Each structure stands twice: as C-alpha cells, then as structure tokens.
Length: 326
Ligand code: ACO
Image (cartoon, rainbow, N blue to C red; front, side):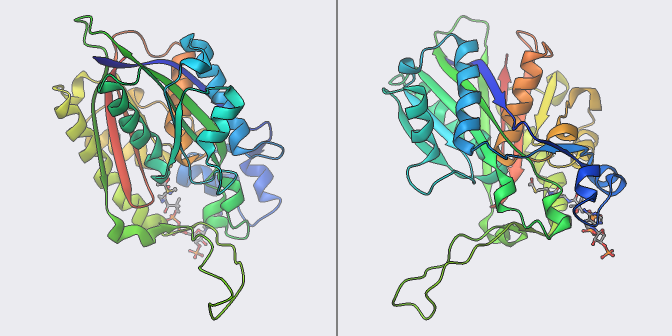
C-alpha cells in the first residue's frame, strides 16, 4: 500500500501586518526583525478563527483531491490554539465539512505537529482499515502572544494548511510517503512554553483564572534547531533508502531564515532546494509546513516523481521529518 498526498490547501487571515506596521505599536523595526529572522510580514486573525481557517484549508485540499467529505475516514488536526477546550478542532472541522464518517481528533506537538499528525494518519491508512485521511495544521497564535513582549510577538502569524492522504495500490513507481521519523525531549521543555490555566477550584489556595502567554529562550531554540533538524532529516532520508543529494525539495518549519540557511549548510545542500514563505507568513507553528507545501504545490514547484523532505521542530521539545515522492 502506498500512502500519497493527493490534495493540499491553505488559508491565511485577510489582515496582513508588516514589520513597519508593528513598529508603530511597539519599539521594534523592520531592520531588526528582517535581519534576524527574514520575516517581513505576517497575517493576523481579526474576524477569523482557527476552525474557520482550518475548514477553508481543508475544503481546498478536498477539492484538489476530488474527495467528498463523506469519504474521509480520519481527520487529525495539529494545533496548540484550538478555539475551544471542548469540542476539539478536528470535530469542529468535521462538522463544518459534513465529514460524518470520519474519526476526528487533535494532536499537540507544537511546531512539529503536522509531521506527527502525518505519521499517525499514515499508520491509520497503512493497516488497510481506513482509506482517506485529512491532516491539518492550524493556528491563531496571535491570541497566545504577549503583545508587550517584542522578542516573541513579532515572530509569529496565523493560518492553516491541510493535506488529503489516500491509501493507493502500489504501482511499482514507489510514490507517496517513504519514511517518517519523530523525536521528543520533554526535559528541555522550558525553552519554549505557554502555560494552560493553573489548577484552580474552591479547594485550592487561590481560586482564579490567569492567562499565560508564549515565552521563549530564542538562543536555546536556535541551537536546538540547527543541531537537531539536520540529524532528523538525515535519519528520515536514510530510512527511505535515499541520500540527501537525491532530495529535490526540503520544506522546513518556517521559524527563522537563519535556521534554514544553517540546516542547508550542514546538509551541504544549496538554498534553492529550501523554499520559504516565512517572509510573508512568519512562524505559524503546526501550520507552517502544510502552508508551504500547498504554496509549492499550487505554484507548480513540485513535480510528479520529485523527492521531498518535510521537517518540523518546536516546543516540547519535539522534532520530526518525512520523506515522500510526489
Ligand atoms: N525589535 C527590536 N529589538 C528587539 C526585538 C525586536 N522585536 N526583540 C528583542 N530585541 C532586542 C532585545 O531586547 C535585546 O536588546 P538588549 O541587547 O538591549 O537587551 C537585543 O534585541 C538582542 O536580543 P536577543 O534575544 O539576544 O536577540 P537574538 O539576536 O538572539 O535574536 C531571535 C532573537 C531572532 C529570536 C533569535 O534568538 C532566534 O533566531 N532564535 C531562534 C528561535 C526562533 O526562531 N524561534 C521561533 C519560534 S520557535 C519555533 O518555531 C520552534
């Protein structure tokens, strides 16, 4: 059985906010943000919701795949910013799509979430009991930013990306997902965190709800990323029976241009193989990789038979990579 991505879609909020725009509401500059990260703008939700963006991306992916919502057996949404604690984002999307035959659940692996969800969906399809899956990465990160903290809020954006996976009979062409690798290190979780509500009820010392926002040790995240991402890519590529030289496109989590450059250098691969969209989108956590995949797919940048690496890294700490033949 081959597990192929047969459709992609993405959605961004209408409101585009440039670095220059941000410099009017906080002490920052286009020069500071662009030179350290490569980010020039990001889209921020004003009227949009995580569910709305995820549903729009999913509809586009289903349309491209020529798959009806009722045909979906599995929906997995990777997110850290679902609109509600209950019900989960996947069930909200299921309802909006009318995908009444799907099992739907969420998964949180932060910026690696799409890679983890892709792997879970692949396993559902590989056992032959499920045929079609919808995998989504969707975030409205702007609501968990501390807008007084210029060192974090300028880095992130909102949006959603989706992919439809199908279990296909093997054709001898060797297409679809060849390998997936993930890892986690909870002992280093402090470097990038956002707390949930603390335990609070009439029997605790304090009885109140407090909100927490994203905090990050940027330099530690940078060091983690530039060391771990090349390693996980090499592992996934080897598991696929390929070499990094044979890979046509490396689609990495869009956190920072300098991280991507460093990964390219460590893999001895040219930057032309590493497309980016962080310039316009910023870092959208679990949505970064599927939005970039959709951009490349819809601009005809990836051709049938080409070999692609998808790789994510983020809070947890977590990391993951997948190798596929388009
Ligand atoms: N505008 C202007 N000045 C700023 C801003 C800003 N937006 N943010 C911070 N500064 C200032 C700081 O206050 C500090 O000033 P000081 O020296 O007077 O104290 C100075 O700039 C340097 O701050 P650093 O945090 O040391 O900046 P650094 O050069 O490390 O760059 C960055 C920060 C871009 C976050 C970097 O650490 C990095 O690339 N980290 C990688 C992590 C990353 O990309 N995370 C994204 C999310 S994580 C993920 O997706 C996995």
